[in-house]
Amino acid sequence: MISRLRGTVLTRDAERVEVETSGGVVYEVEVPLTVLQRLPSPGGAVEIRTVQVVTENSVALYGFVDAHERTLFQRLLTASGVGAKVALAMMSTFSAERLARALVEKDLTALQQVSGIGRKKAEKIALELADRVADLAIVTPRAPGQSSGAQEAVQALVALGYSFADADRAVREVLEAGTPKTTDELIRKALAG
Image (cartoon, rainbow, N blue to C red; front, side, top):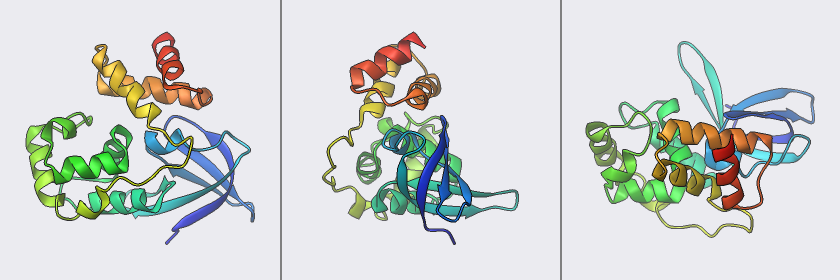
């Protein structure tokens, strides 16, 4: 199992990054929006914690900056009806702490903001995972520069009438072109795109 990658970011697009290790091996890693915004531009050094998901049709790596994000992703996968794509969408919509809090508090309104999750699925997921993620609901101090600007931008676009999927796509495209300095700049560029 591949649990961590350390190397150089080769490419960074809306849903994944390619990381080249010192041995010359390049790994493609799918990342949630909350992680993408914190990764360096191509050429930058990075260390990513990974989860390898093997299905009968594919083998994929999912990457996270912090250990608690990886742990939450792994726990999300234990819920029935939650595959890697849904778990990734959940973690793109909310920070790990906020998502864990939404599950613990059974905040169905918040969970329904995730693309592909309706009321019944939100109820089922919250019921299954509330106890399993309670230890992750505690807010962890963030290092400087690790804001939730991308999440705020997506929420602002949704408030302006964008669907979650369109808002998410617009913010990812802006982040792919480079990391804006402020959330306001991110929102402006997403609206202009």
